[in-house]
Length: 534
Ligand SMILES: Nc1nc2c(ncn2[C@@H]2O[C@H](COP(=O)(O)OP(=O)(O)OP(=O)(O)O)[C@@H](O)[C@H]2O)c(=O)[nH]1
Ligand SMILES: [Mg+2]
Image (tube, rainbow, N blue to C red; front, side, top):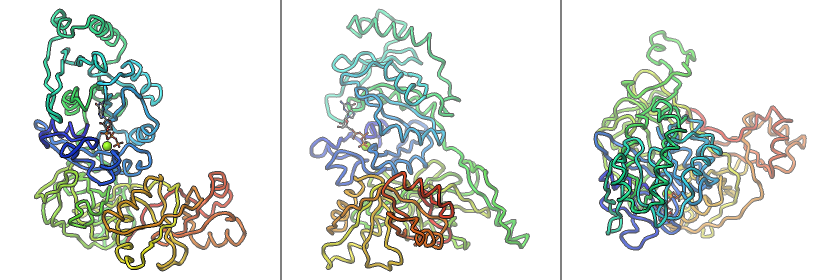
C-alpha cells in the first residue's frame, strides 16, 4: 500500500514489493536486510510526497505485535491512521492493540479493505466485524463490485460513479480507470458485464442509502466514523480514491497538549517558582518552533553510521541552523540544528525549512531520548512523554568473541538508544557483568542479533531468563531493600535499568499484582520515562 501511495504521489517511478525478485524487490519502506529476508516490516519508516496542493507524510508501521512498541511511538507523531484490513481474513488480533492506541489518541481512522483481487468476505460482513469488534462505525465511501477473478471495480458512493479498473501490463505501475455515471444505469450494466454482480451492486447501494448515517467530516475527525475503502494495493485498484478522500477528510497538522512554563516571565519576576501551566495546547500556528522526538535509529544508512532522531514538527518553522532548547535539560543551553534532513525511507536529504506535520531527522549527539521536546522561544514547552511498553521477555546477551568487545558494546549501546529493546543489569554493575535484554516480543531479540551481525559485524549469544514481567520500583532502592530483607520479594529478580533505577522482575502476573497491592511503598509501575536533566 505504501509503495502505491508513493507511486500516486509521483515520489517513486515503480512500486516494489519485498517478495519479488531483483530490482522489483526494492521497496522504499522495508529496506532493512531482515525486512527483505522475511518479507515483514520491523521498523517504522517515514516518507513524504506531494499530492495536488497537499503534502502527505507517511509513517509506515510494522503490523507484527512483537514490534507494536515501534508502531505505538509512530502513532504519537501521526494525525491520522489508515487501518488496513485483509479482505479474506477480516480483522486480525494484532490490529486490535493498535486500534486501541488510535482510539485513545482520538485519531481519525481511515479503513482500507485490501486484497479484493482474491476471494473475499462480503463487504457487509467486514463492516459488521469492524463495528461489532471495535465499536467503530464505518462509512463505505466506495463499494466493491465483485471479488477475486470477478473483481470489476468500485462504486464511488459519494460522486455516484462506477470505476472500472484495468491492471497495468507492467508490474509496479498505476492501473487505468474508466468512469461511468451510476445514473447511466444501462451503460453500467453493459460495462460490468455480469448480471449477478450488477444486480447485487444496485441492491447493496439501495440498502446502504437507506441504512447508513451520512458521511460527516466532524465525526471522521473525532474518530467516531471511519471512511471505509475497498480495493487491491497490488493491482492498484482503489488507492486513488483513498488518496482523494483522505485529502478532503483527514486532519491537518493537529494541536497537542503540552506543559508550558513561562521562563521569560519568571526571569522578570526573578523567582524560581514551579508554575507549569498544564493542559495547554500547542497548535500548528503557535509562532515558535516546537517538535518532539518519537523515534531513534542508528545506521539508517550503513555507510554513515550515525544516530538519527526523528522529530515531528508541531508548530512554527524549522530553519537550517536554528538554535533550539531541549526540554529534559534544566539548563538553558541551546543546540544548533545545523543539518536536519527530510527522510524518505533509507534516503535523506538536507533541508532548509520544515513545517508543522513534517518529520525531520536530526543527528543525535547522544543527548536526546524518545519523548523529548525541542523548542524555541521564552516558554519552556514539554509535550507528554512517550512511555515504553512493559517488557515481557528477558535474556542474557553475551559476546562470544572477546576480541570484538569494542564493536559489540558500541552496537549494543546504539541499539539500546533506539529503544528497540531495553537493557537491565545486575545492581551496582559498572559494566563487565552480564547484560539482560528486555523486550516486548521474541522477534525483537532476533532483530538485535541480526542487526549486530549486519551492522556491527559481531556475533551475540542469547540465553533466555524465565521471568515474564518487569516493574519499576519508583519508591526507590531503600524501599526495595527493606522489602527484600523481609523476604517480600522472594522469587523475583532485582535489577537496575540504564539510569540505575530499581526494577523487579516477576515470574508471573499474580505475583506482580500481589506485590503491587501489598507493598505500596515500592510504587511498582509497568514502565518508566527517562529521568529529567540528564
Ligand atoms: N493478493 C494480494 N496480495 C497483496 C495485496 N497487497 C499486499 N499483498 C501481499 O500481502 C503480503 C504483505 O504485504 P505487505 O505490504 O508486506 O504488508 P504489511 O501490512 O506492510 O505487513 P507488515 O508491515 O509486515 O505488517 C505481501 O505478500 C504482499 O504481496 C493485494 O492487494 N492483493
Ligand atoms: Mg509493512
